Image 1 (cartoon, helix red, strand yellow):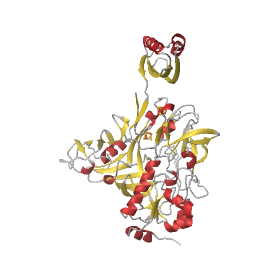
Image 2 (image 1 turned 90 degrees about the horizontal axis):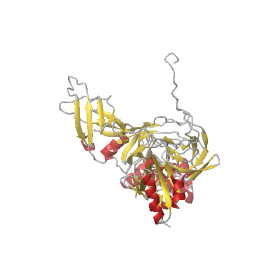
Image 3 (image 1 turned 90 degrees about the vertical axis):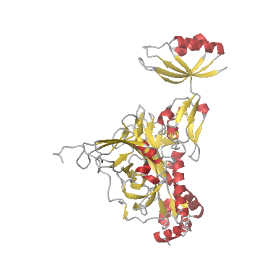
Image 4 (image 1 turned 30 degrees about the horizontal axis):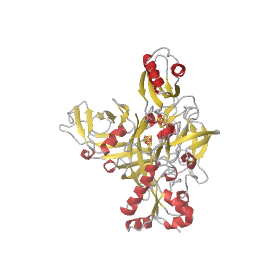
Length: 135
Length: 390
Ligand code: SF4
Ligand code: SF4
């Protein structure tokens, strides 16, 4: 079954419907929340991995959009500017899933795409601003 | 049996000196023994490349016509010190741009200058009879300046803390982002490659030592600020927490962006990665003993940055070999560890310095004055008190 990563932006509103519940119940989709930052009264963001059939998927997205949620494909890769990177390793210290690590010799960055949840922690932490997320 | 500074320098001048990096020397010593390694090798090179906030440059712009006595100065909108003579200034790396905050600061201006880019210089003055101009707005490049040199009050810390955070919130510090409840650990030292860890008793490094600063040949100018020789030491005499420091001076015009890089630490501020390398003469077996130490022999103390006080609680000690493995144990918990200081660059610096000595015949300088030794001075705190209480 196809699996897609979505980046949702919620308008600032008091309460949001339990959207993941609706995706499961009404559209037969399996959502997996990779990252969520939602505070009442502020714009929120959630990165979801959704598994399901194509038709259900399209209907699910139409539902999310009808709720005023902006749906975009989520980042699927990180891009490293090697001219800026000084191999300090600071990004590896904030990557909780262990997607960014240093090799055994400690002098090369290793990125394991399968482990990355596109949380942007490395982007923010990099003192050289050498990492960007790409789509 | 030992070697003198002069003998070593003669060998460097004649191109016959044997020079190894600290990592190579430790390997050799493990192979043939410290005594034999000390006999074979003349100089060992060290290197470190980490954020060093106490760094900056002295600049002289030359005089405009009519001249100005600059009292407020900005470079690319970053304020530089206006309290020196008419067209002299000091620009510190941590100063932030008025318009771009921590995304651009003194360190970025210096990196741009080294890269050969033009920088916008603006200055203001009240005007005097001898310096009538009150305002100037122009562009300068490094090559246009009369003097431009680093004067870094505190570089090359001899060991550093390992930072963790036991509190319940994320902390943004000069040690990077520290995740709550011991979620990660960061450390900042080149370990076995670090200059002052290879000469723990300051036998060969002192005022006047010729060193590598950001790609340029430079000197140790003085002890660094907060130089603390009295820090706790291990059985090899190596400090287990931040101890000695160096104040350094070097020509900015000969620096390279390979070895100087501005840093924006989110939630903290601007700093600069500065590359420092120090050559150590293998005078005798005693010097060789500490040169032969590896990351497994050198340790650092874990401090809890979740406690926001001057004295942070120490949560134990770990070796650099453990830190480099990517995870350490703190209070029985496995904590992922990441560096801030670049091992790759530290290696490049030690290798570059080795090349200077073997190919360019860069000789060593015996210190003119030793750094303060253990027992001579410590670090005093700043007390908050009234005039009457003094
Ligand atoms: S985006 Fe998050 S998970 Fe991916 S590499 Fe960066 S820190 Fe790690
Ligand atoms: S934090 Fe930035 S500069 Fe440091 S290793 Fe990671 S990508 Fe490179």
